[in-house]
Image (cartoon, rainbow, N blue to C red; front, top):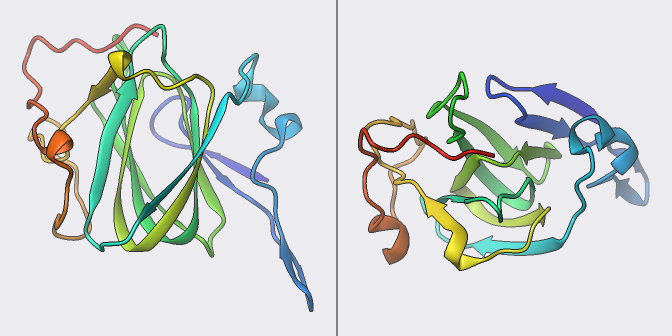
Length: 182
């Protein structure tokens, strides 16, 4: 696997190497041996599948507060998405900065998102995502950012055409938001 750092500490883009022949192809989605430098003592506790049908839909931008903070590995297995992460870690040099990467079924990229980094995406083509999590989801510890928050100024590639009621009702960030301690 090819592992690339991003401008946000701990966020990695991993490109799986694909072996192809006349029968088809094979690639890894996870390899502890290759991930050990940044995975440390974490374990996968949950694997989820997400499907979104409508182009322009934005899902997220979500994170978990401690003690339920989690590392996520996200891979697009069908279609195309614009995958976005936002650093919400208190005292981080990239606090409230964002990074995005196009993930597709064809490019075999996945995003590794550490604790304290929020995640969301926009659907560019009907998509299915595979999520691997290092902690169990608990709605009491969920945090969220607005996709259109002017403090974040995220550049979505398409007009946002669909967003959940819950995500559209998140408050804009104010000056009192000082992030989370992870």
